[in-house]
Length: 492
Image (cartoon, rainbow, N blue to C red):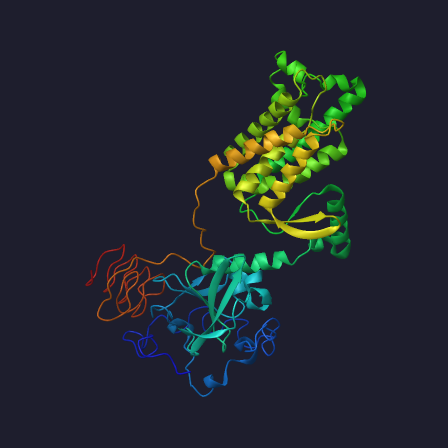
């Protein structure tokens, strides 16, 4: 393989010979951990790839790269392999220095930085072999550190794909704009798919315990569906339901079960004007196992629904499903005198919304002693079918129609209240938005302000203009390049 052709930005570019202010920048000359890092010889996860062609990460690249004489550029001289714009060094919130292109939004991560900036599973050492959708191939992009052409890795999982460029010499990784989110999603889901329920909590005992619980209850366990924010309403509901159950239990012991009839749902009393019962019944429970099962389902499904819909719409959905559950039970038990209690109708509504909002999320279930994964939409379909069958059993004392009523209303509101799809926000320091595209000046790279050096927040001098004066782009201060947001210079 020959070196990349000219025009890639690796020749001699005007304005980059001697740049004052760049000689000694704190943390740039010698970066801790980049000299000799343990594990560089044979790296687990790279050597044993399921392909005949070995990974260049494990063996230092193909023999064709030997003797090319590539010059290792300093960090201040690294160029974007996409648009040849100089990369800017910036601090990621995780306190890692990354090289970012403000023109195309790409980012170069040195070896070991992906685990801090993107996520631990995104570190190439942690890539599972199942996510490789083809053997590694030589790619068209050159390493920003000056080590020649990089290799491309096409990674994929569950219909999502991303192509990553990596250097076989320095083990750096190039991510185009927004590729960090896709890489993080693929690697996390692949790891979660292969983790058994309970394995993170207590090893073998946790796996066995979770299996037995699922075998006895048919309760599901999410494979992977993280939330972006804390589910404060769900947590508040869990606390409130537990507190009310304690008060209810004490009241029943002291005065008998008749004391809860005014606030439980009794069809006969509802017909007599006790309309508040369509809501109050959902905060009572008939026993310890009853409330435990409901709280588990509330915790599993409720946090994601709250996260997706927001607290206001979550509250509307929860209460509407509770009312629908009561009305469903009433339609099947007109003039009935038996009280109904439990949050099952409301939680069934959350399950219906979950099926609409997250149909492709997978759940672990146990069926006929076999544990396997199933998509949420199919689990909900089986659950509804079982409820419909059990409605036909006259001896059953479970309010199955309340479940169905809550589920139908929850699914319907899930469609109505579902927010519009929005692009994922960029991960910290990765996939940052590119700057405005301006015409190049005198044959030099453009970007946020073309000129003899890139803009940004760098030091003043003949190099980047930054926020102070300099011969590079003005940034937010004056300079001889385009003025940016500050006073204009001799440029535009």
